[in-house]
Length: 402
Image (cartoon, rainbow, N blue to C red; front, side, top):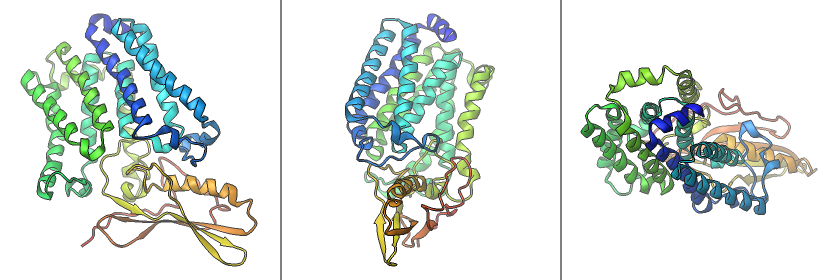
């Protein structure tokens, strides 16, 4: 905290960064109360989808009354924190920003369906602001790493062909041109964050604003709203930056051990999805703690087969509500639901075996393929690893239709 307080004295405009990061939590609260209704996802009547690192999340699910109190407290803390930054009560502003960050992480850990880049990226930027020295240099670097990494993650045919974009505003040809321009923006133009001439920096900034404004109709309001709010950080830090250029800026920022540790951690979390065999967009493996870019549309028909003593069988579809594109066909989600169902199946003497099937296909193909085909899952319990291959998940690769 001391290094941050010292930098706030040296660069008073940094208080606006703290205010922006706290305002993002107010935006999150609005999102949870509207488009991503937290009360329904965490309802006692809704089966939980626990993270592997927090398998007991069901036991900690708050009642509706307690959740209302928690969300009210979350919003109140965010308002007070913004006030602390506005009235230059920096020490309290830092403490409350930490509290908001931990509060948000604790809520997200209640259910895997609450994950998303729109929470991941503000948390990364907040940790940079709170922990990494030389903020006026480090904050542009973290934006660079986010956009550059996002560009690298788009280097696959789902993105390059335009198949991952369900765009209704532009004709297909312009959509294909657009996806290539995004690559140019994130892998090339993003270096202009460190341009010594102001006009090049603001040229890039305008491109980023247009990019997020355009994405509004593809991702709905919250994600672009968060990114547009966070882009304000670049406008705040730019006037205080010495004209060092890319290499010198990186050299100074990564002279700090915490910068190196956080960057290695961030990059390391992106790697398992590439090291595990199969297409992560189909299997869901290795990317639980990574940024997720646009996937080609994947369809699935998850279901259980309940075998009974009289040798009859019953098909039980698995259709949990409030799944996003990135979790809609994730095997981990249905593994969790299967665990929940096994808990009550063991009390039904008529059911002797439960099989778990998860056929998937790309939107542009007609053939269903088994991502999961596991038998007697209530007796042969499945486990799940976030960073290593899971033997019960088939390592499918995408097959394009004719």
